[in-house]
Each structure stands twice: as structure tokens, then as C-alpha cells.
Image (cartoon, rainbow, N blue to C red; front, top):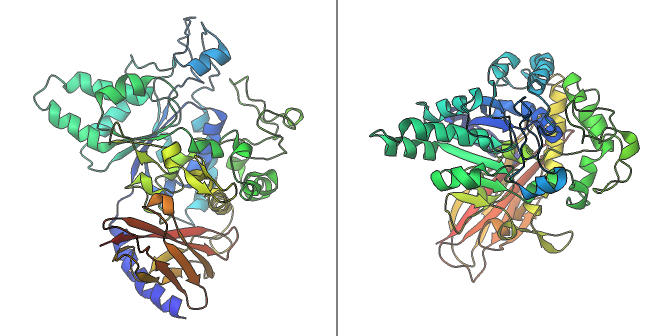
Length: 499
């Protein structure tokens, strides 16, 4: 009963704050690989969480169209040269219709989605945002394209909100947009102000360097644009997941979960989701073998079964925009569903993963460069399954995420050696109960604090180390899992700062 009374008071407070917040703006650039298709299907299920302002076809080191004139091209990227050779006229190009085809399927489930959240954009609104960017060659940024001009226009508009630019493939269309701004304004008196505005407005989340345009143009010429660079952690949500994801999380990527809970009986959009052994084949990509059941029992990535997860290597990019209570958007070093990144020693505007951003993996008992992402796989998969239900079920039949609250607040000043009491509570739109875990995210802060949770008293006790120094932060995650199915998880991050 105490939990419910606290939650009622807090929900009134939180509602007034949330109502004033504006959704984040984002533009997607994509090279159309099969993992981009699967990422896009998940993305559509989360479009109620942010403002999509562009869906732009682009190229990468793996996929480009060619100019149609037989012009030969050799990749600047060593890995691509080694795999595919030199003097190619095109490479595994999936075309510029697949987004529209998926949006046509999304249109069929949209009436059901708005039963769960009225903020879901219509298929027509999203279709109007589809643009073709720089696709002829890997890294091509010479031409001004419909897509690059659209990105430039958004970066220059009067909306003060940031533009979160997702690079699911190469960064070349983004680079062309920035180059166009430089060409148009660098000789004008207000260039310094325009460059500062764009640099402050743009955030780039890139999955690896999939062409050389960041290294050659964006980094040197726009060094104050914030960049979140994921080169390690995304692998746990990509093709080699069986070699990376902890064993306890793998069942949520296997066909026994994916088939009944996401792919089958959830509408025609989810039938388009690529999975192992599903019999599907992407037009334009001769390398797409995963749908052939005869070819998946033994691969260099492991052995797979029908409906096993293939890859959504680009989903971490948009998951950075989904507010599940981890407060990681403003500071990616805190970690969340999109991974955890540390500030570069060479450029304070660039955040990177790698060894410095590793988390302790309790299953291997080692520091793990992928664990900042893989630790959330179960929660992310259950959340996706819950949203897949929204495509076909009524509000009362489906599950929805709880809201988690902490009576004492989420930013506390503490003393070394102090014992701090935290009182978690929740509201759940479906009337389900919520079970709590409270744990210290040591790598996100300055070290480990002792945390215990007493379920009978509904309180957690956090003991700050006696050795803690002034200014240090200790991050405590209050995690709530509801009793619906699929169970949905939300959080509150409490940051305790030593006085």
C-alpha cells in the first residue's frame, strides 16, 4: 500500500514535468543491409518516442549502387578490399524501395498502434520523409543529393532542438550536408555563428567507420560536433552475437523466443523481419544466405535454428533516444540500452567505446568490451516483443511499461561512509505488480558502493565507501520489472555525489 500512495503523489509530479518535454529530433541514414531492415522494423515500433525528421538512403563500404555507367571503384577500406577485391562497378545494392515497402506494411498496423500510444506517426507522414542521399559509391560526397540537402536544411532551421543523426551505414551523406553548409556560408560574415550553431545542434551516432568521410572530412572540419562512436559494443546485437552475448541472455535471441513472440502472428510487417532459416532473400544482395535453412546449421558465427535472430547492428543508434529512465542521453558515459561510451582523450566532443568503456561481466568474471550493451539484451528483447503485441492486440490485452520512481530523488549529495536509504515505487498502466532490483553501476561512476534491497520494507540501502573523495559519483540503478507478459523493464538512475 505504501508503494501505491507514494506512486500516486509522484505520478502527478512526473506528469507535469514530462508534458513540458519536447521529443528529440532524429534523421536516419541507412545503406539497406538486412540488419538495417530488421533495425528499421524495430525502429518503427519506437517512433512514438521521438520525432523522425528524415529517412535517408545512403551508401557504405558494404553497399553502393554504382553510377550506371560502368565506372569502376576500389574501396578505401582495407577490410572491403580484402573481401570483395578491386575495380567494382557496384556492391550488394538493395535498392531505394525497401523503406517504402516496409512503411506500407506499417500502415496496416498503425490503427492498432495508436490504441497504445497516439504519438505513433502515420505511414504517410513517415513516407514524406524518405529521401535518396549519396548512394553511387562508398564514401561519395561530391554531389548534393536530395538526402544531403534535406539534412542541411534541418541543421540550419530555427528549431532549437538537437538533430540526432544516425549513421547505420557510412557517414557520407551527412558529410555532404555539412560540406554544403560550409560551401554556402564559409565566405559570409556570420559563418562563425552558423558553424557554431550547426556544431551544437548536430549529434552523430555512428556504427563503426563504414566509409572514410568522418576521418577525412567531418572530424577535421567539424571537430565540435558531438560523435558517439560504437565500434565494439554493437557486435552483441549483430551477426556474431552467439560469440559475444552472455549465455543467460541468448535465449531471448533464439528462434524459440523470436518466432512466437515477435515474427509470427504479429502482422505482415513482422513477417518481413529477416531471421535465420525463414526462406527470405533480399533482392540485390547475393551474400544474404541466412534465410536458407540448409546453410545455417554450421557457419563461422555458430550454428543456428529457424527464426534465430540474425542482426540488428544499428539498433543501438536509435535506442539512445528511448527514455527508459537511465538518463544516458545527456551523458553517454552513463550507459544504457545504446551502450556506454567514454570521452576521447583527443577530442572532448567525441565519445567512444573500447577497452576504456568496458564493464565487468559477471558470467565470465572479466572486463568485457561488449557487456555495456549485452547486459540489456533480455530487457530490450522483451520490450520489443511487448511492442510487437501492440501491432495486433487491444490495449487491455497487451502489456505496457511501468514508471519507476524514487522518493528521495535521483540526484543526492552524500558523505563518505554514509548509509543512504532509497525508497523505490512504481505506477503501472495495466495494474501489474513490479519487482525491483537495485544495483550499483560501478563503471558508470567512480567506483563501487555497497547496495542491499529489502523487498519486505520496500527500501534499498546504499553504503558509500569510507574512502570516497569529494566530487566522486556513485551510480545506483533502480530496476523495475512488471508482472505482465512480455515483462517490461524501466529504471531510475540515482547519482550520489560525495560532498
